Length: 346
Image (tube, rainbow, N blue to C red; front, top):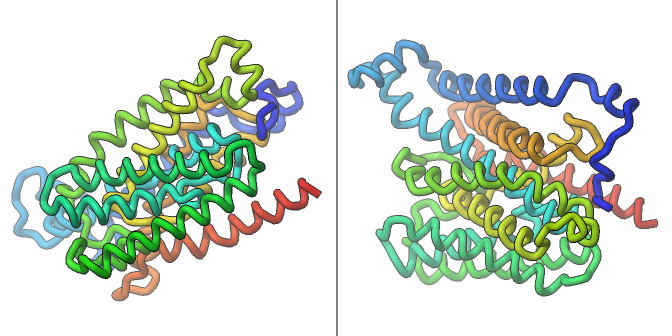
């Protein structure tokens, strides 16, 4: 059976779940949109959003607010929303494939693998459009396949430990590329931490064209993810091609995580926090991925946008990279999950 329990809930569980899932999803959408609007308005300089937006639409960029909106705030908010949704759904798919609630892109080395191949592709193919995104995908895929090969048939904690080792190896590779090719990426230290400072609309143009179709395809495979969550034998008895489904979900999770890393850097714990928060909101019993995947995308987008807003306003005029704030939040959360997992195994 699934680690989250059966998908069939009793009438009492339905009554305890509170608001219907559709209403909760709509509220998440409203909260995400609110975070985006706040991210556009607030910062070291507060701008009049309607006036600035009118200037951008009309092409009149003489007002400072319009220039700030077009060249700073809008790319930053879009980057945060894209990265948050991609990493959140990637984490949910990885947890479904591995049947492990502790799995996440940064925990099992996906982020580090994507980061290493991003650096490597920029060093070997400087100026080639799309090279960073392709390298990030190949790195993410390499990390997942390596973890699966090392921890085949092992327990959940063994998978996590394998991921830590793989992550360390790829991080060493990143530092090696930085040492021999220091001009590979401007402000490479910020990339290792993760953040959206200096991101432009041009930086997002290759990534969003891959992230949005991958999110749609992940949602289209919700039923297969539900069947996979029942366990290998029940899924096969219901006609699911387990190996093919796992392979496709792994590919999608790597596309999502790799594209996010290519412009946001090594953001930590988003793919771990968001899926758990979504399952908590929609109830402990396993809800269909048809609802969980869009909910994770919305919550991840809003959460990262809010964290980015806090990172550039709490200590203004100084800016704290959002990756640091996410680590402060996600680290204790991950430790609490490890402690809970250890208590269950006793």
